[in-house]
Image (cartoon, rainbow, N blue to C red; front, side, top):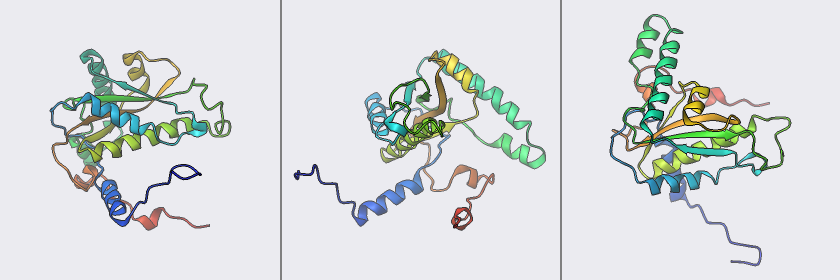
Amino acid sequence: MSDHGPQPPSFDEAFRQSFEQLLIWRRDVRRFRRDPVDAGLIERLIALSCLAPSVGNAQPWRFVTVADPARRQAVRASFLDCNADALNDYQGERAKLYAGLKLSGLDDAPVHLAVFSDHGTEAGHGLGRKTMPQTMDFSVVCAVYSFWLAARMHGLGVGWVSILDPEAVRLALEVPAVWSLVAYLCVGLPVEDNELPELVRFGWQDREAFESVLFRR
């Protein structure tokens, strides 16, 4: 350690290549093995995700592990209702394709993790939130993505279930009203690994070209 504090690590070319592979092979997993996952590992991954950046250093993320069968069933019921409603938005071949997609791993994933944004926290003292209050939720998304990458690094898959009624989930889990659901995650060992997103492989949506999302002014 120098007089100016600890020296930062050196991220060499081998690390950069490994990190690129981690990004490429991170998948939204829907097909899980039912093998149990060590609870200590999940806690370690949550601890790592708490290193994510947050507006005003507010750290508004709140993680809820969901093991109770009745609560899981309530979440599953919300998914089924919302999924049926979403199907009504599509017609013809697109509806047929949607109906054939597997859009959650709720039945098989050994770990369910709900991630909320605590809108009532006083941490951070409001810094950075007056003009863009949504940065509280953005901060939680950063934590979710950090968890996602850390889980993949340990061979676990993560699936983000967004076809849910947030208020139904909040009530099922009996968390404070000022907590807003950001993500409901299924976690476990994946049935398979693939570098291509499942929605690409099943013809729902191809990747957009990098050049199409970069603008210069």
